[in-house]
Image (cartoon, rainbow, N blue to C red; front, side, top):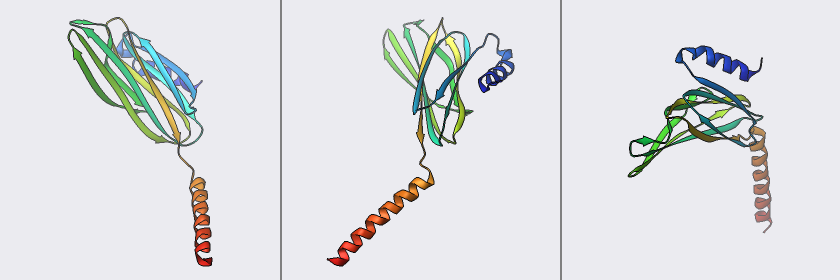
Length: 171
């Protein structure tokens, strides 16, 4: 059984009491160095975006939802909007632009973690206000240099320092 199938099965069993929860598992593949994603959803949902990378990295993720309303009419949006990067919740920031009769509410979930090479998940959930809504985001992996890289860099700087000191001694 693949990791994606196990995650979907656990999510369905663990959240089965929620009712009509839609669960989708989507592989993004290997981050090289980033991946974008988006989805149009309805009702209550839990989307799982799986990804991997080959070297230890600092991984950042952001997910954005925009809700537009015209007076008392909502053109869609997501309530209880939440996301987790490998089980750690992303931080929510909300901004609202109000130019009556139009109100635009932007919700951004963002976070980062230093992770070893391997396979990971970004989970996004919420409940749609109205018929359907969309969200989208990015995952970016920035490789962490290995100790050998730092050692080589320091050796190079030391060699340059030695050459400079030797030239000063000759002069």
